[in-house]
Amino acid sequence: MLHLIFGLLAYLQLAAAVAQPRPIEPVQPRQSIPPHLPGNWSAVASGCYSDSQTFRTLRGAAKTDEVGMTVESCIAFCDDLGFVWAGVEYGKECYCGNLVAYGNPTFLAECNQPCTGNPAQSCGAAFRMNLFWKGILPPSSPATIGNSLWRFEGCFRDTVSVRTLPFRASTSGPTTPASCANACRDAGMPYMGLEYGFECWCGQTLSQTLLVSTYECDTVCTNDHAHVCGADNRLTVYRHDALPPVTYPTGCTSVASPRFRLSSKYKEPPVEGPEQFQLKVVEAYSAGAGIGWSVLSACTTCTSPWDYLIYSPENNVLVTQSFSTSAPPIQVSVTLWDGESPVFQTKSTLPPDYGGYAGYCETTNPYTGNGPHLLRGNGDVDKWALCRNNTADGRLDVVLKPRTGHPHYDTRDCGAIDIRITGA
Ligand SMILES: *[C@@H]1O[C@H](CO)[C@@H](O)[C@H](O)[C@H]1NC(C)=O
Ligand SMILES: *[C@@H]1O[C@H](CO)[C@@H](O)[C@H](O)[C@H]1NC(C)=O
Image (cartoon, rainbow, N blue to C red; front, side, top):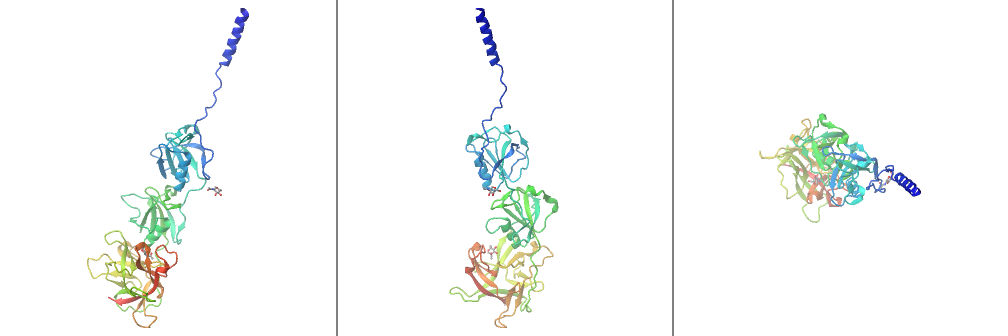
C-alpha cells in the first residue's frame, strides 16, 4: 500500500514536472512576404513602415482591392505606372511612389494583416505597410531636354488660384517633357513646366521664391515613364536657354510695299489642284480673347482675322495687321525652325523687349531677276514647301526645309513652293 502511495506521489511529481510551463516559443505570423517577387523587386530590409492618412508614405498612386489584393498585384500595378516603390497596407490597399516621403520603419510583426487576394501573404495592417523596392533609382528630370536648349530649373510650387506658369498648353500628341517643351517653344515662352503627370504649362517669368526640393516633384509622366512630370501642385520646370535666335538674313532687297500678302506657287505644277494659294496666318492655338499663336498656311477653308502683313522692325520681323478695328491683337513672328511651320504669337504675351523673330525678308526673284519679290526665311529663298499637316485635318501648311520623320507630316505629302510677296 505504501509502495503504491509513494509510487503515486512519484508519478504526481513527474506529472507536475511535465506540467511546468514551457519556455514561450515565438509565434510564427501566419502571413509572410513571398520569397520570389517579380523582376528585381525586393522587400525593404525592415519590411514594415508606418503610414498616416495626412502624410502618405507613398503618394504617387493608390488603389484598393477588396477581394484580390496580393503583394504581386500591387507591385505590378506600381511597376506599370513607372514607380520604384510599392507598399501593401490594411489587407486591401496598395500605394506607389518614387519617394518614401514620410513614415518610419517599425517592427515587422506589426504588419500582420492577410492580403485579401492571398491570406498567406502579409499586406501590412492599419497604417502599416509592407514596403517593396524595384532596385533602381526613380525616374528623374534630365538636366536638358529635346534640342538641349531647355535646362532643368527645379521643382516649383503651384496653386490653382494663382498659377506659377499661366498658360496651359496643349501639346501635339501625348504630353511629355519633350512635347511640352515644343509647345512652349512654339508659343514663344521661355519657361515650361509639367504638373500632375500630364499637364503642360508655359510662362514668361518664374519666381524663385516658389522653388522647393526636387524630390517633391515625384510623379512619373503619364506618357513617359523615364521622366518626372511634377506632382500635385508641383511643377517640374525647364527654362529655354534663350529666346529664339535673332538672325538678320542676307540677300534682302528694299521693301516694295509697306503692307503685303503672301502667296505660294508650286515649283512643279501639281497634276490636280491649284498651282497657287493665298497664304494666311491661321490660328493654331487660342487661349481666348485674341491670345494665342498661329501658323502660316495655304488653308482654303480657314478664315484669317488678319488681312495683310507688314515688316517690323528693321524689315526682318513679320507682323500681322488688319483693316478692321475689331480684329484680334496683332501677332508677330516668333520662331522659324527647320522642318516646322512659321509661327506667330500675340505680341502682348511676349516680353516687352522681345520684338519678334527677325528671320524673314524680301528678295528679288532669283529666277527672273525681277518678277514678284519672294520671301526668304532664315536666309533661304528656295527651301519652302507646303505639307499636308496630319494633326490639323490635312491642312496645307507652309514648312521650311521639310524633314523626314516629322510627327505632323510625311515628306511625300510636301511640295516645294516659292513664297511670293504681293501688295495688299
Ligand atoms: C535586374 O538587375 C540587373 C542588374 O542591375 C539587371 O541587369 C536586370 O536587367 C534587372 N532585371 C530586371 C527585370 O529589371
Ligand atoms: C501643324 O498643325 C499643328 C496644329 O495646328 C501646328 O502646331 C503645327 O505648327 C503645324 N505645322 C507643322 C509643320 O507641324
